[in-house]
Length: 163
Image: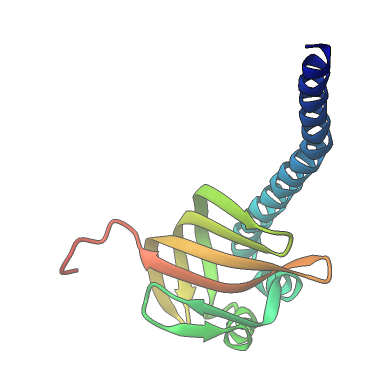
């Protein structure tokens, strides 16, 4: 009977040790994910502020990958170089208002994150006034320790079928 109790105690002790060793790794991963979520959320908010301040070009250079592509809610693909060109012509391209809400960031491993949010804006693109609320998804990757946006896609929010 004593031998049976010892085996049971050893099994319980082994399970406790395994859990104790695994818990810090799980907590570290969740802490890392939280810090990535916070960093991406901050950069998304900074993007909106940069747009309104007329500093879009500088923000894009710092935070977008060179092959960044955006699918707009107006049905067009725009490359990083096209967006940089627009940012260089503030007489025809400017942001009067941009409000980002409902940000949700999901982290996948150490190098990928997806940000989803609602974006209400009042802008001028190539001299054409545009105002709309869109649902946006941004894909971020960690390139050598720096988070870069590689792709975005937006769809018009609250659109009725047939619009």
